Amino acid sequence: MERELKGALTAALKAGREVMEVYAGKDLTSWSKEDKSPLTEADLRSHSVIVKELSGFGYPILSEEGKDIPYQERKGWKRFWLIDPLDGTKEFLKRNGEFTVNIALVEDGRPVMGVVYAPALELLYFATPDGAYRVEGALPELPLEEIFKRAELLPSVPPEEGKIRVVASRSHLSKETEEFVERLKERGEVDFLSVGSSLKLCFVAEGKADVYPRYAPTMEWDTAAGQAVVEASGGKVLEAETLKPLVYNKENLLNPYFIALRRGYEL
Image 1 (cartoon, rainbow, N blue to C red):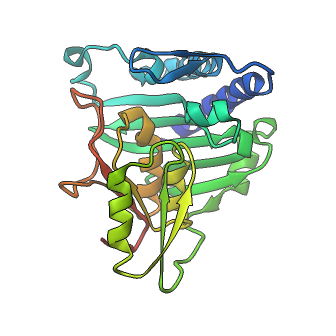
Image 2 (cartoon, rainbow, N blue to C red; image 1 turned 90 degrees about the vertical axis):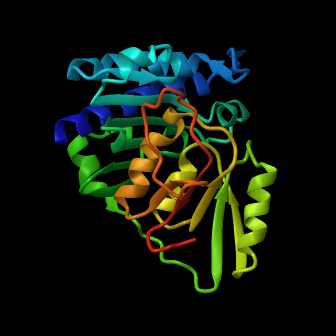
Image 3 (cartoon, rainbow, N blue to C red; image 1 turned 120 degrees about the vertical axis):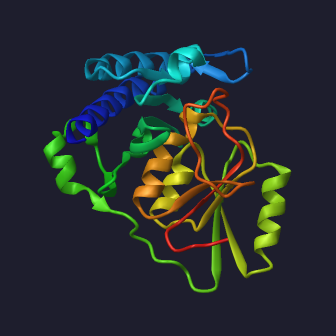
């Protein structure tokens, strides 16, 4: 899987450079897709770069910006790339830096490798079955060998005694999420963190948050890379109703509501 990881890292860093070129411009024009979610030039440029970089592996590619592949065609996929060229487009348009490039390798319905890159924050997470890692800095300027040297194994932040740290979305805070947080308060003091995109899953992976309840719609490409990071760090991403791990390449690509838990934290 080393070859695939290097390919995904290269693709994410190149895509991040494209995203930042658009981000640096004065006019962040967006269009509305059929589902009313925003689309920008950065989404399209990132998608193009990632597909170009990953096409040589011979695995199918499922992307938010190229998702119209019939289930009859993709249901037989054993291994494929699942990508979100720009996760957190609303955060991108707000210019708060909390957006990511997500690339996952899915095998038999489970994300076995993931890369989450937040170019504006100069922050990179990646994971394989061997572990989950975090790297900071001006990464597109570095060779991959140097990035691997700088990588820190997760989780790095210990739990806080007597506190439950909850991370949730800046743009999608639902009534169900608020009710979940209220129930947690029966167990102790709750610190509430708010951050955009798949950074929420990465916060859980590195222990900045104990739990991430998601009672709002997400698609498979929103979560696969982050789930790989959480699971490689020893945490869990579970369906809220069944408490089974999220699975991928379903006929309906919409995720059920879910709860992500850091290593050692139980509901």
